[in-house]
Image 1 (cartoon, rainbow, N blue to C red):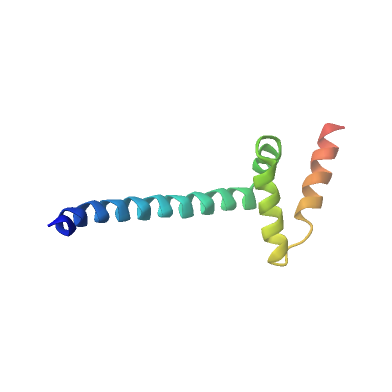
Image 2: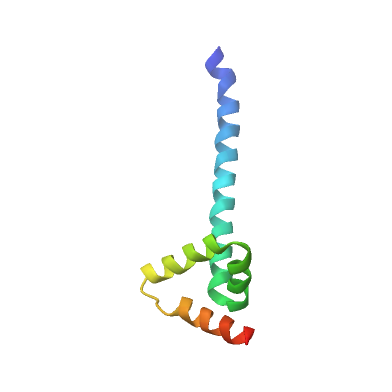
Length: 81
């Protein structure tokens, strides 16, 4: 009897976890895509969430794309002057 009452609860928990996972995946994709296409957004991220920007730089360097960090730093340094 106890197992039958737990089944709906287990299904609800599973669906909830699945929804949270999907939101996390889409959120991460959106964030990565935004950082990948906007240098201004990366500058905002460098001020508010530098650790997330560092993860972005490391991930694209792992995939073989180098020089983005340097281009950003050069532009941001020149814009201060």
